[in-house]
Length: 246
Ligand SMILES: [Zn+2]
Image: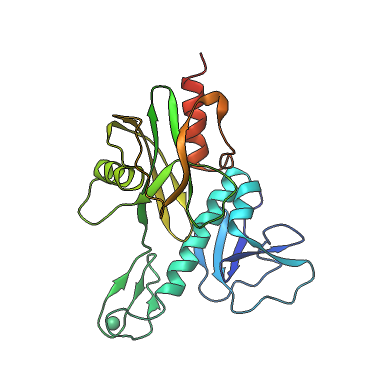
């Protein structure tokens, strides 16, 4: 893996040169590039650069094909660019903010407010009952696959409470035995998906159809189309299938 990559974003899309993330010798990074880690830096573009071989790719499409290290760096880069664009002005007094320089923060020179990159926690949970898994399509998104349930954590809530509340709200069923599974940064635009496995106390669903469509219980050998392998949703479902393989 070459060092010195430039993850440049325009309206949430990643710039590629000749189909790859460009290196710093091919794309100028400006005065204040954001450090992404060992791989390189992130920058926000105002306009598409007129460079031969330039193309823009949606981040979700890029993550679905990139290797893990590159995908992780691109996701971090996207979140930092989003944060920088979202905090160009002070939310308290409206003054343009400045990069802190010594740390990853933006400071208001007028009132002293500081703005650090912000992560939004969301829970994602595989709910099972009697060897079957609860899967659904999110209403209104036209996604071509079923997935596990997910939702944002609310202020004052523990992660486990968020799991129980979301499943009850969306599927109308109580869960117990909520266990941590793993997590995944999800840069759309700045979430951290925190994965759990939980057991439903009943298989009787009362589905909120404004949130979910085609919700139901599925055996491991009769799964519908499920999300791609780069998602924690897929890892949760693969784990469920592996645990029920015998
Ligand atoms: Zn201010």
